[in-house]
Image (cartoon, rainbow, N blue to C red; front, top):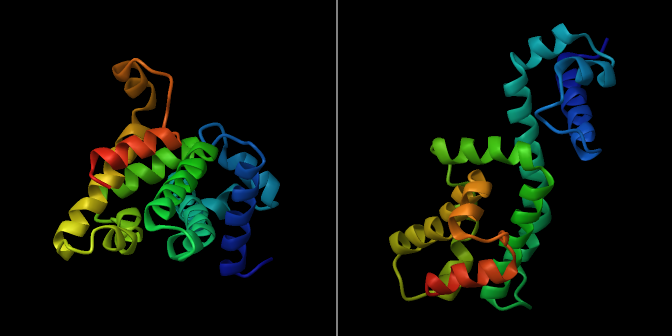
Length: 183
């Protein structure tokens, strides 16, 4: 039997693999995860307490993996700051669309918790774009860039109906969003 930390890690990796292979988080059961992990259902409950807590851990890993891959975009000085910001936001959109059901859980968590992780990531780029404004104003601006996108993702179908469009968070969409914010 694997030691507890290794078993917990094995369960997380197996769950991520299932999601990467197309399993929808809403349809993925503890039984399926246990079967693919070759562990007892009780082991999953022991290590995580609930399916939701396991999925929150998995989502955090997916987000961490994504942030590691998009971090170079934020600091690539070969691109103008606005282009870097657009590329970063598009990468985040791609991840959200790839892990749609998981993303809603992650977005709900970030919106309802004290976390401002995504807004914090773009502070340096915003400072390059708007060096004349204070740190407090930069933080407000980062929230104004990120929060509407998070809100729209949480209400995708309602947003499309409200806007009478099928367009959804594309590059031109992000361009218009940033322009409305003076960026």
